Length: 293
Length: 341
Image (tube, rainbow over the protein chains, first blue to last red):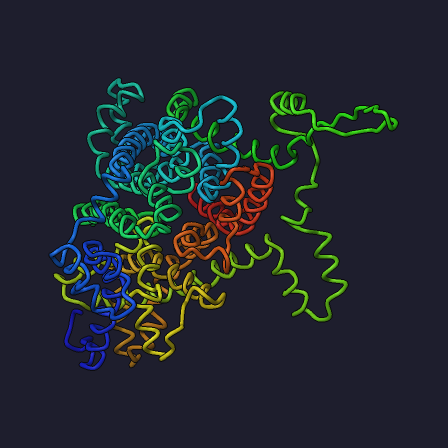
């Protein structure tokens, strides 16, 4: 606040701070709790007797000789082969981000530089596609994919995710390229460049901030997707999120909830690191579409 | 830009969307009009010492041959749309005729799986969206008054519920509200009812899912509104203050109108996203009490039987629902574009 006159009275400041603290607790506490609990045995994490057990871990101490155990992680990563899913997720995310950025930048650039009517219709179509719940499309994929033996492969899923990603990527990059002055590539064209050369030598060097922001969101979409990956991948090609879902079906009954807990924590850590490094880009990406509207 | 150059630039992305979004929609619509072939029956005369009998057997080979030849199945028109699993026209008409009063009618309607899924999806969409707007606004205003160094930290933690995948987020909460988990135990203690379980009742399950939805979505509106607050017209605020406006009046008549365009933006995006609510149903294991349209499709597709036609029909109905929700957005974009050109 700028001046003394605008300063909030003391009681209001206390209420505000209390509210923020409460929100932080609501937002972050579940993750910290799960992280802490993932190093306990099931009877401590889900304790009928006393919730404090999840913090101190008396059962873990009695069973394992130490208040912390990595059994959950061992069970998930080694016994249930979660490492396989981790590799699959890495592959899927890498290729989805690369492909959708490559074709998305070309498309978004073209849309931002063409003043014809059809660009509007293309953008509207993209918006409609963006609203489509992915699961509704999946029922359209299954029959053709079974018929042509495309089902179950990572490559198929990558292409599908790229396509589902495109509408969003196009819109993001379109609004980003609009902010790059047209005069830049116009002048390059006056100097004798073709449109593509102008793009290559003038636009590419200045487009990275927007591309990185868009790339983050493509990554998040590929990383977090459940509907497509669960339905289109065979068991050995599963990525992390459907793998966690399959833990719920099978292992929960065997009393190995802790495998799922450990897997959930393992899948959250990369996102945590991502937010830590790219917080600024994520925030700017979220607000980009909004502020101009 | 020339048409030709434009074409080559847009080609890869347009091809991807055409092949994997537009064609699948066509495929879904076609599929929804077909149903798998019935088994081929052959009638053979069986003559024994006590006379002849007609026996009907399933011709496995012919059935398999027919099913591979025409994997789509046979054309049935809109039959699947009207059957009991979807719009259930006959059952609805029956319920309308027999039930006295709207209450009884709706309770009969809620026994039909499609309407059950629809009821939850709509309730979820139209409660989570306003709640997340309000919560996000409150957090944004509160965080805006904090010290500069604290803001970054608060934003960091606030992003977490939104950034994790919905399945993981809902599992994390689900384990905590389990009757043996920390929140579940706290609630039992609070209401001094040792048998209280949020999973056991339909009403509480819905509340739980809605709370999850708000938790998951509030960071989005928070971040957008927070960005909007940075561009507040300071002189307008000051003149309002000089005119004697109270803090509340300044919020009501300066800040909220300033944020209004953002509110519409967030609300529209959220309507689209909440309408597809799906993973939380799996994460909270709440199929018995709450199902959504997306879950309904998933349920048909999964499992051994893979009811493709039924799933396709639900998909078409869901897409129609999205189209209705989307209409205002389209009108808005149309106006924006025309204003610009």
